[in-house]
Image 1 (spheres, rainbow, N blue to C red):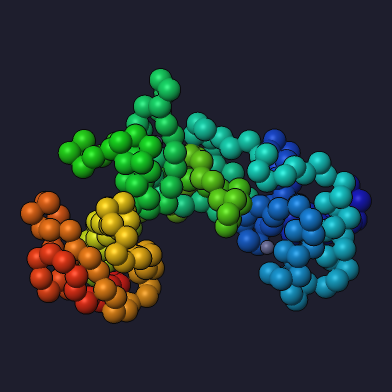
Image 2: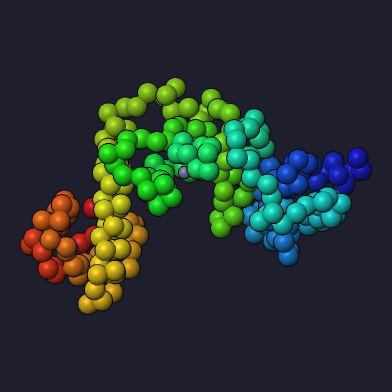
Amino acid sequence: MTSIDTEASRYVSFLTEYRVLICRSCKHGISPNGDGIARHFMEKHITMPIQTRQSILIYCNSLKLIDPSNVRIPTMEIERITELESSLGWYCQEQLDGKECGHCCVTETSMKIHCRDTHGWIKSKGVTWKRQSIQTFFQGKLIKYFPVTCNDGDDESTQPLTSVDHLIKSLLEEADERDIEQRRTLNKVSDAQDLVTLTPIPYADTKQVVFYHPPISEGRRPWSHEKNATGFCIGTVGRT
Ligand SMILES: [Zn+2]
Ligand SMILES: [Zn+2]
């Protein structure tokens, strides 16, 4: 190993099996496409001396890195990759083509949406997923979780919930339910008529909007802001 390699190895590590370059400090992969590596250190680690950056680039040029979209994503649980951040998420146990689907995600709401869209899941079917430690090589558009062995730090059961935690958890779960409900309604409206154009509104955003309500007789629950049972009304949407 040259002195350049030694210096670079303090900041990046190369996963030989997957041919992925990991930033040790960010704990996720860096895309080698274009000037991805140079840009990462220029934007995320601005105090790093130019010489160190150059050493990293020289070292990376000697590696056989592949396009992130071609990286093999493990489908079965693997040993946790220590260089990557891990978190506690969910693992889909539905059957797909004669084996477990294995789709992984962070929130239970995303899992419900995945199961509904991919496996035709309905609430009466009950839970068809389980808690799972998960990792992803990359972030952003390239995010793709896979199952890994448990890390003690991921296990929420080691940290008992306080009453405030319980309150926050139940509020979030309630918000999740409303989110799914709202998505269903939006889909129904766009299918059924074109009187209003609705776009999903992020939860962080709370504003006054005009909503079309399908009749409650269709079986949906009334929304908290709702003024009348059917037709249009002015309402506030958001987490509040
Ligand atoms: Zn980084
Ligand atoms: Zn699935």
